[in-house]
Image 1 (cartoon, rainbow, N blue to C red):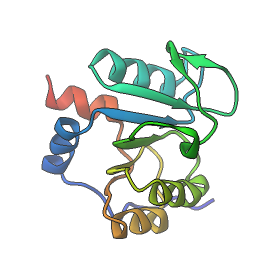
Image 2 (cartoon, one colour):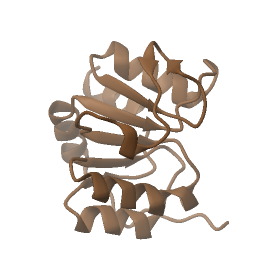
Image 3 (spheres, rainbow, N blue to C red):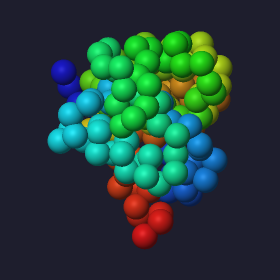
Image 4 (tube, rainbow, N blue to C red):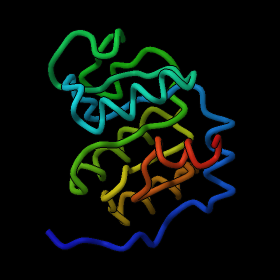
Length: 143
């Protein structure tokens, strides 16, 4: 797979605003393995006061939170979807975010870029961040 350069991305000021506005974060691909980036980042965000909703194909709980198999299963509002999946998974995730209608932020983690999915999410009114780590960005703002 060819790596993409993000052509759709939030500015630093927009990223600051995202962290002020967001309360509930669905983490796509949140691993139960505490050595994985998805676990460490979600744990950090939970400790920073955000509500974390794990989305993972297995497990019943991760980080003490109920695990859902898909975005569609989550019964409460989702402010941000934080994605730890391969770039080719982003198009269906963008579609699922659009279908929910309540997702405000589509965030692809460090090393993850899919401009087609990002354009789709942006056109649907979401703020888009690609190739940035939520933990690193939050730490930079709150240092």
